Amino acid sequence: MLVRSWAFTPTTGMYLMNSDLSFFARSFARVRDDLLALNSTIEALVSDPDVLLNDNLNYFYSEDLEQKLRHAARRAEILFELAGLPSRRKLLAKAIQKHEGSKKGLGETYFLQEEHAFVSPAQQSILDQVTAAMDVFSVSAQDSVWEYKRRRLEECLASLPHHVFKRGLEPTSEREVQELLDELLGVLFVDYLPEGKINIAGAYQNWKPDGGIRSIKTLVELKFVATERELARAAEGIAADVGGYRGSGDWTSFISVFYMTGAYTTAARLNEELSRFKAEGWIGIAVVGRGRTEKREKTTAKKTTANTKKKKK
Image 1 (cartoon, helix red, strand yellow):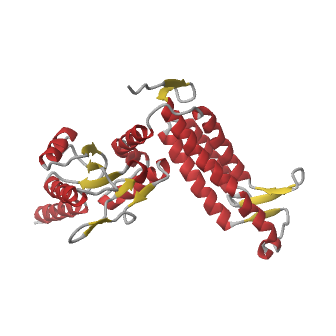
Image 2 (cartoon, one colour; image 1 turned 90 degrees about the vertical axis):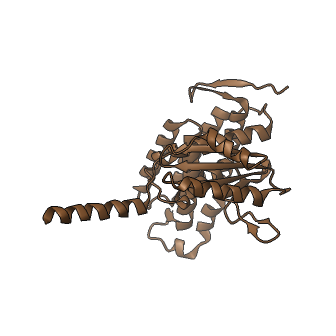
């Protein structure tokens, strides 16, 4: 029997399973390690002849360092959001804003006499917030790794509308939602493979899923449904996917996600449809979030123009 262990984290104000705590601890540890690895980038500035021609030898700027720090900060912000640490995210955003307004921006480094070394203020600020988060979540795992990862995946997929809303997005296509999903899953799972990185060979054609997590052999198929009429087309797509992925030895678990701009169906009805397809190993997740269709807007615009002409007559 699987025994789950729960712990209360005062910082987040939530009861979390110990595997949740361990998972986030490892995720933040990866960001920390990447930040520490930037020390070599900082040290390389000293030997760069272009940098040494700087008007102030105590301060240097590196565009490469700035880009890497922005990427690390972005990963940390997403983890703070997923882990329920909004205050940490706000502190980090405030620190980044402060460094961007400094003399040479986010990529600034300077020579610290006490340490006899070059340091990056922005790197240290991000590192401080990430290290603090690690302390919150540092506990060993008790759960099955597969079960935990699968649960985190399903939770992330179910919360897609929230992340769309938080970013002020209003998607008009599957591609826009897919890009956000790739970003979220890429942070949560180190072995996440986005669209184009997976190829399932068939007798007559190769199949390219929208994404997958290799360690739990799970593929994700996303469908953007902007009108009730599009449900049939999305269902046809899933039916084709079920047939195409059947028999794959590398992938044994599948999740179909319907991102809808209205409550056109339910998860229960979607799973009924999957059962009708005899889709073994598949589950369906149906969510409703912000979005629109350009076609609908054009139709509305035409009607408005026509009504305006009638009024003029």
